[in-house]
Each structure stands twice: as C-alpha cells, then as structure tokens.
Image (cartoon, rainbow, N blue to C red):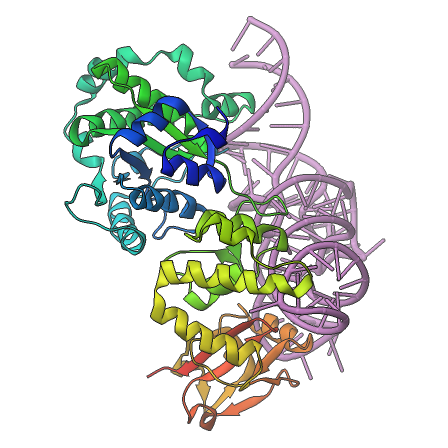
Length: 422
RNA sequence: GGAGGGAUGGCCGAGCGGUCAAAGGCAGCAGACUGUAAAUCUGCCGACGUACGUCUACGUAGGUUCGAAUCCUGCUCCCUCCA
C-alpha cells in the first residue's frame, strides 16, 4: 500500500509529513481510523529528567492523533525503566534508583501538557504508569501467565537481541525481559482503555509487534503497530546535540533562547523536512515557502524556530526571545539582555569589589576553567556588553552590574544575561 | 580449568625506559568567509599560575631505575583460542 492511497485523514497527513516507517497492517489500520476514534499509546521511559528533541516526533504523533479525533495515551515506564530497554543500544543502560525514576516521571509530564489536551473526554489525552499493573504481579504469576506466549526462538530473532549477540556485547537476562513487559503493557491497555494502536520509534518495532501479538493471543482482537522513521540531521547524525548538551524540551534544562537557536540554526537541507515533522503547518503551505536563493531560507528557519518554540514554551516566551534575537542578531541595541538565558555570578568570585574576567566567563557557562576562559579571550571570541575582551587578566568593578544583568557573549551566537548573586 | 592478548585524554587510536601532557583522527570551542546554514581555511582543545613553570594523569596497588604510559609483581576487568 503506498502512502498516497490512505483514506483516513490521520494517516494521510502523517504519511505526507514523513512520519511513517512501518505498520503491522496499513489497510486495516486505515479502515479502523476511518470508522471510529482509535485509542493509541506511546511508552516513555523515565531515563532522564526531561524529554529532548529526539522524543519530539513521538509527541507530535500523539498531537496529530488528537487533532484528528483520536485518543492518545502516554505510558510512563515506572516499571520498564527499572528494567532498561536494550533496543538500539550497545551497552546496558545505567540502572536508575527508584527515587530518581519517580522524580523523572513527574518532570516529564509537564512537557506533554504543552502539546496535548488532557481530561476525561473521548479524545482527551491520559497518562498512565505501567508500574501500576506490574507492581503486584509475582514472578511466578508473570511466568505462568505470559511466559508460554513468548518463545526464546522468536525473541532471539529480535533486532535488539541479535545486535548484541552479533557484536558479542552482553545482554543481561534483565534486559532480555524488557520486551515481555512492554508487550504486557499493550495487552493491559487494550483491556483497560480499548487501546488498539501502539506508536513508537523504528527501534521499537520488535517490542511493538510482540505486544500486538500478545493482544491477539489473549483477546483475539487485532492490535496495530506503527513506527516512525529515525530522524537524523542532514549530516547523518541523530538529532539533538547543541552547544555541548542535549536539546531538552524542558526550560529548566535548556533555556528557551537556546532552544530557539537550535532550530534557527538547522542545516539548510533539514528545514522543509523539520517543518513537516515538527509543526502543524499544512504541507502545501510549507512546500510553497520561498527559498529559491540563499538567504531566503532564513525566513523558513525562523518560521521553524518560532513555531516549535511556541508549542513547547508558549507565546510569551517566544515574544521574549524575539526581543533578544532582534537585539543580538539584528544589531539594534548591542547590550540588551532581555530574553537571554540568565546566569548568576556568585558573590564568592568578588574580591575587593572587583571581578576577574575569567570568573565572569566561567559563571556564564562559557568556560569550565580559567585557562579555558583565557583561551576564549585570546581567540577573540569573548565579549562583555558587546565589547571584545582583550586582556585575559582584566578586572571589572562591581559598578558593571549597577544597571542590572550584564550581557556576556562567547562568539557571535552565544549570549547570556549575567546577574549578580543576591 | 589451561594458553595467549589487552586496558592510553569526551570517543577512536598511536606510543613500548628519557626528546610524553602523550602522534593522528573524530567531536567540541573560537576566528575568517557567508545567510545566525553547509563546505573551506586558521587557532585552541588536562588543571593551576598570563610564555618558560608547577601539579595531576596512560585500569588498580606496589616495585626496579637517576628517570616509567613504556620494565617487574599482585589485583580488577575485557577479549581470543583450547578444554
């Protein structure tokens, strides 16, 4: 079945935007989606305190689903995170403590609220925790109930398993069980929520079909699996690294200004693709964007950054960023700090009413040692209030902060509003 | 259980008694050119003292030596082959 023949609006749109990698049964799913609202889920393990751009495609998927009148479920991996998914990894995951997992799960939920509408309505999103149905199952029960439905023969053919074996990397028994838990999730959700569709990244294919199979074995019902393509940047890397860190969706982990910059600076070749994947802008509109020559594409990049930032961080935050961008890139007022990420200069760095330049750059997060700060200065990339710093040993008086936060820059693109510790 | 090989900076990977803070590559940072892009070119890329310097580092604990990432011994972990 080619992507052009979809009849359900959801599949049609999502296919056109380039989300789809594989499906257990395109035709049947397409029919189901036309007939009635479908309940679908994606599982998220709480391995980090925030989601990052790599997860964005999954979130967008749920969002689209909701927009087309279906019901999205989010499963927090309270149980599965304790096991560790081996899919797509060469090494075992570092196991997290229970407290850490709980904390991460609480943190993750914030992000979903930005993208989805929650509630009790028929198409309202809902968050569930798979720990709820695993915590009371005994080992014997689990083995007796589900064990007979999984053959080792089949499990050994799973990509995630085979890859480890082929590379002679260890795969622990713990990890080997991950797919069973994820499969039981699907069954449990089918029973509790009439959920018949599981979405996920392409590396989840194995886990997903095992789950769909389990649903069929226990209930006779057809459950669907649909996976997304692995999104890479034009230079072939996984998405999501910028300025030394991951591109987090949570403003507590990455300032929205930096988030905006990440999208503003994507490779030319990625703009159209990303607009389709990460915004709600109609495909026809995206394709009509003027980008014939050189700099024209910058408008499209701004649109991309604006749209995504607005959906993840909100209108108000975006407005602040625009002020900062105007000041720092369009050169209106060189030392405006509005909308820039804030950093704090600890009082302890002040000696006799003066601050050393190197301390200023360390406090700003642009250098992790005095030596690094000096190198930055020597390289000509260090600026304070727009003025290039020449002297690696310069001392600045406290009066520098008299008017409020000070703009500190590393290179042309990284700016920070440095304020004095209270 | 036996035999052999290995563990080097964020990663890959050379070095195999002094000239080693350790080649080279990747990643990262800054500069130039541009369009806040890509490609290219230049510089930087352990910490502290602004160069020369000092300290900490080549799995881990000791030892030999004027001197060790380099040699020896114990330990830990990994790999290969045999059983």
